[in-house]
Length: 247
Ligand SMILES: Nc1ncnc2c1ncn2[C@@H]1O[C@H](COP(=O)(O)OP(=O)(O)OP(=O)(O)O)[C@@H](O)[C@H]1O
Image (tube, rainbow, N blue to C red):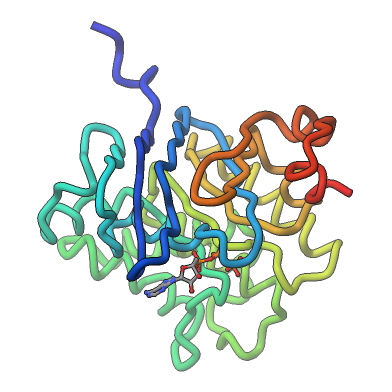
């Protein structure tokens, strides 16, 4: 038998999702190989967020399948979904940090929620380690309002990583950041991918981010995976639907 680790981590087949008579995903297919970063490129409203929500089981597709490892997301109960979701980290565009909590408390939150038997020492160690990974240990007792946009994104990334997810879904990780800070975030995404061997799906409009982080770029158009390839392959395409993203 083929060892598990050589199998793709996410396999999506013929996914269909509509709202009323509006078909958003129309037979979408995607395979994410273990340890790779896949960037989903698509116009506003093309269904990128809907796709991510289907992967974490927040939306139920009409048909098709989504396998994360051995689990068919579309067939899991809520309890089983909760278990699977602990293996999937999500970096929200808004960062989703709690404004009334310190950075330490924000990072403790997922640990205390998911690992009920964890000791105080272990919590402290993991929080410090997660902040060290993003070079922000000195902010541990600060409030989110004291940090810049780039620092908040790094804290949010540290919090996403703290449960050691196998998969990370990034929703426009560099939107609203200046080019230098964006580059810092892109480098962190690559560093943490290498360190923790995570696999990622990244939604981004920022072509520098796409270029710097993608192993594979997937163009979502009219509900389908219209094109797939490396950044360079797609950048050289003469297809007008693909070219418009690279011009
Ligand atoms: N819960 C919902 N009910 C009805 N329609 C929805 C719902 N969620 C999304 N849609 C519709 O699905 C389409 C795709 O939305 P989605 O948010 O996935 O786009 P997107 O590609 O992520 O866009 P953007 O880049 O602007 O974030 C939009 O037309 C949106 O209005």
